[in-house]
Image 1 (cartoon, rainbow, N blue to C red):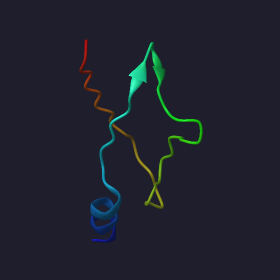
Image 2 (cartoon, rainbow, N blue to C red):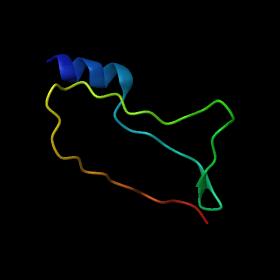
Image 3 (cartoon, one colour):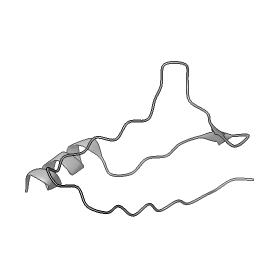
Amino acid sequence: MPAHLKSSLLGCELTLPISQGQLALGMWQGLYLGEHRNHGGSRKLLVTIQGE
């Protein structure tokens, strides 16, 4: 239950802008992973690329 609540509050998906093969983030922006488990397991990453 606590993981479901944290996931609903923090979200579980992310959209990142990429320009010329690099992340297009602002000067003070960054990408961080917040882990809410004591014993992490394997991860799956799903990437969907849209654009020109």
